Image 1: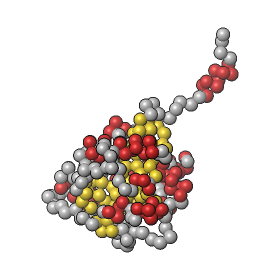
Image 2: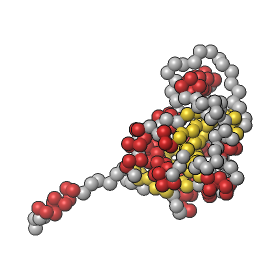
Image 3: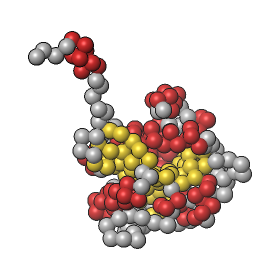
Image 4: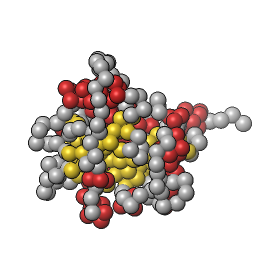
Length: 256
């Protein structure tokens, strides 16, 4: 029997399933998947010293008070990216933001303002060139709008394995192009001590996550912290939400 023309028309109107979906990981099982991916990336791949409460997961005392964003591949249902968000209420429960374990941020925090800390961002190695990171930003944007957030901030990592010349080049670029005003500065609790070993590159390649922050209009609030456990230098990144770039608003917030 031939398929009616109306039915064929309906079939042609069916849109293909998007490659990725972004969700808030609300259940314990979903959050556990996030902790597992973080462990595989940070500990197994990058060799970081991860002290989880259980084997083969990356989970600390902040996680139970965070909102966890998860990006899934709809073809395989595999978790491919995650980040966590800690707000003012979470800070009340934990006593501090995670960033306060690395920096004195007294000049950043203002009474009556709402803050959202982004942390533990990681992407499966097979998905780092695709849409996984923009999907994470879409989830962050949704939370910013729903919770009326004034400021986003977090620690962005710069690998130290590339040597002094690389970290010097990155920091020279950040100081010249992206440092905050002096009254929005932080102090690293363990400053990174590096020696200048020659001229820096003019076309320095920034880490992907750091570059993503800067594209949205973020500023760097001072010198880096030495995270020996992860083998990285962390810089404190601050983004004022009412000064988000037009590109951010167009591609993320307007789609929510």
